[in-house]
Length: 361
Ligand SMILES: C[S@@+](CC[C@H](N)C(=O)[O-])C[C@H]1O[C@@H](n2cnc3c(N)ncnc32)[C@H](O)[C@@H]1O
Image 1 (cartoon, helix red, strand yellow):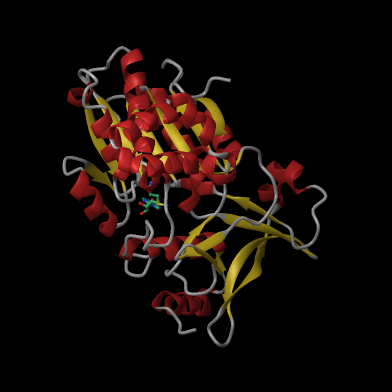
Image 2 (cartoon, rainbow, N blue to C red):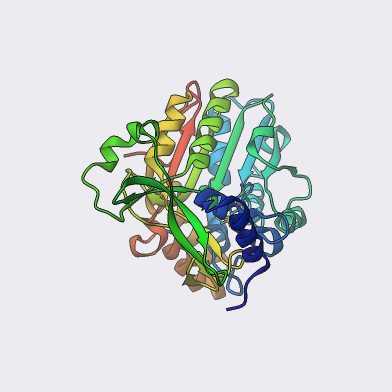
């Protein structure tokens, strides 16, 4: 297979500096300014590489909009609130959320929309749907002068991970090396230090050679930063992603191109690369930074509690030719064998704010 432009850059960087840490490799594949996967194209939908929940049914964004508006009402209708989405893709979720909340008295007058998005191509898509939004390159520059209502759908799974791998010589940080022909291979990088390993000891016990433990420092930093901001200004965040509720060892790094699994080391920049989200790590980071957490609960349970079936039936009744497609879409989002169980929803809530809907046990 011909080398991609990004593969050439990666090979040259490895030649100059040695094997590349996995997190840097993933960050370049997704976010290199010229050749990164998200920086060049719109990857979603049938013709793209994968489909996300807001692209499956309008009800997904509608319910999240109403979730946010309900919380705002019960928090005493603060005069201003920032509605924030991290990694909004095509802007579909927020467009549906905004339309669904138009009749909540006072909400649109109080709310403004902020998008955290690195991709110029996707910013343009978002601007076509929500021209009055404001954009930020990362979450650190979000405003801190009013409560925040934040949503992130399939954002954290796209943040770079690092992996510890057990070699015969002990735990090492996994890296990417280049062979003489320019193809890429995983290799054990520099050995993990005692300080690296100490907090992870229970997770590493009894591992066999070759086993891996994935860590997402960027995801934990997002959870901690959001939690800290919520504790200061009030509000809540919904983090929705595919992943596991409790930490475990295992290899979950995956690449997707045209709805098929691909090798993450072949054709860098041409495929989406993600890893399962470790929700336990997010919960721990958020709590340590001062937020309450609810969940994670499964996406199916969350959406059904918010009224997925009622709203779907209402839309189906109003538009009989689309009824079957709407019901199928709802099932795809919520049924256990589809996205209903693998995808999970975690809420971070400011300590003084009411408890959000969707997390009843
Ligand atoms: C898998 S897509 C999800 C899109 C959308 N939330 C949806 O559900 O359709 C990931 C989104 O996060 C953005 N993104 C990924 N990493 C980012 C980063 N480090 N900073 C800002 N945006 C990022 C991508 O450009 C894209 O919009």
